[in-house]
Amino acid sequence: MADLYTITDLHLSLADMTRKPLFGLAPRLDILKGLSFSIEKGAVLGIVGGSGSGKSTLGRALVRLLEPSGGQVVFDGTDITHLSDAELRPLRRRFQMIFQDPMSSLNPRHRVGTIIAEPLRLHGFDGIQARVLRALDHVGLPKEFAQRYPHELSGGQRQRVGIARAIALEPDFILADEIVSGLDVSSQAQVLNLLERLVAELGMTLAFISHDLSVVRRLCQRVMVLQHGQIVENRETAALFADPQAQYTRDLLGAIPLPDPSQVWV
Amino acid sequence: MSFLSVRNLSARVKGGGPLLRDVSLDVAVGEVRGLVGESGAGKSMIGKAVLGILPKAVEITSGQIMLDGVDLLALPPAQRRIKVGATCALIPQDPLTALNPSRRIGVQITDRLVDILGWTRQRAEERALALLGEVQITEPTRVLRQYPHELSGGMRQRILIASAFAAEPKLIVADEPTTALDVTVQKQILKLIAALQVRHGTALLFVTHDLGVVSKVCQKLSVLYAGKVVEDSAVADFFRAPKHPYSAALLAATPKYTDPLAGLQPVPEAVIAAVRAEVAHG
Image (cartoon, rainbow over all chains, first blue to last red; front, side, top):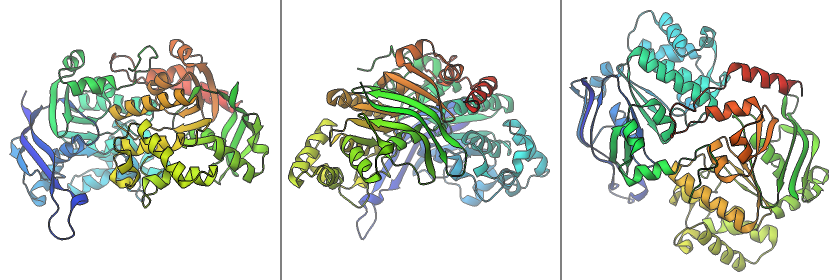
C-alpha cells in the first residue's frame, strides 16, 4: 500500500529557555535527532517512549504544529516541512489531532455542538448540522449531547467529543496524543474500542502516542519506540512484543505492572 | 493489630449527596492496603478524611476513624492535628504542585521535623541528607539546595517520598503517587516505596486506579464504587477470584500486554446497574 507519510531524517530543536543568558540567544536543545520512517495508508502506528523521549514533539511535527529544523515531512505526496500557515490551511482538514486532556482542549463556554461545528465551518463544509449529528452518532453519544457543555460530561464522554470533532472533518490522518492516559480503566476500554472501530470503518490512518504498551499492543499494527529523540525500534506489534530487540524496549515492557501478583519485580 | 481502623464512615457534600457510604477498612502495622475505584468513587476522600484534610464542603456524617486506638473524630481539632501530624504522612499525587516553587528542597523537608517534632535545624538537615540517600538521589547535598523547578518529575516524587518518611510516620497515605510518571520511573518509585515501607514497618494506604500497581505493592485491597466498599479482599485472592461482579469487571477492563485479547473489556451496563442498585439500597 502507498505511504501517507514519509519522514526523512527529521530534526527538531527548540530554544532551551532554562539556559538562556540575560542577553543573547538561548542555546538550542535537540529534541528529535534524525528520524526516518513512513506510515502506510490505513495503518495504525503506535508511538511509545518515556517522558522526554520526543513522542509528542514528533506528533506535533507530523501535523505541523511545530516546524522541523531539518529533514523532510511528506504528507500524501506534498512536502509540508516548511509550508507557511496559509499554505497549510487547506491541508489541515486532512490531518487532525485528538488531545490528551479533553477538559482543556474543549472550549468550556461552547456547547458540544458548537465545538464540533467550529472546524467544519472554518473549512467551509456544508450541511454542518447533519455532520455534527453524524459525528456524535459515530462516537456513540446521543444527539441531545450537542446542547451540553463540556463540564456536564464525564471524562470518557469528553474524550468522545474530542474524537467526534476530529472525525467530523473526514480526515485522512488522525494523531491521538495520550488520549486515554487521563481516563480510568473502564472508560479507557470504551474509548479505545471506539477508536479501533472508527479507524476500521472510516478507513483512517492513525498515529497513537502512548506510554502504555498494553494499550498499544491492543490497538496498533506497528510500534515505534522512541528514546532521547531517536528511534530505537520500529516493527510490527506482534514481532516487537514476542522478541523485543532494543534494551530500552525490554525495560519498558518490564516496567508495566501486570494485574497479576505472580509477576514479581526484581 | 490494625493501626488504622475506619468504621462505618459516611460523608457527604454539605447539603448534597453522599460521598462515602458506611466505609469500613483496616490497615495493620506494616501492611499495605490498596484502595481502588473509578474516578469519583471516593478513594482519595477516604485518605483525606483520615488525615483531616477534607475539602471544607465535605462533612462526615457518621462513623469512626480509629488511629492507634484513638477515635480521631472525637478529638478536638487541635489535638487531632497533633496526633495526625506526629504519626501520619501523605505522598501526594502531583509532584509539581505539592512542592513550594519558591523554597529550596532542604527546608521543605526539614520544616516538618523542626516544627512538629521540635528537632534542631542541624539534626533535621542530617536526617534529610540521609533520606535523600535512601531514595537514591545522587548528590543529595546539592539537591537540598536546589529548587523544585530544577528537578525532573521522578526526582520530585522521590523528594516527596523522602519527606513523607522523614518523621518516621506509622501510617502513610499515598494518593496515586505514580500516576504522573512514566512506566520506567513508576517502577523505580514503586519499588522504592515498597522497600522503605518494609524497612520502616509503616502501614500504607495506597490509593490508585491501576490494578497492576495494586498487584505489585499491596497485600490487601478495598474496591470502591460510588463511595461504598464493594469488595475487601487479600490481594492474592482477589486476582485469583474477585468476589464482587463489579470488581471482576474492573479487572477485565485492565489491559494486559502479555495477552492482547484479554483486558480492555468495558464494564458491562448490567454490572453497573446492579452495583448502583446495591449501593443505593445500602
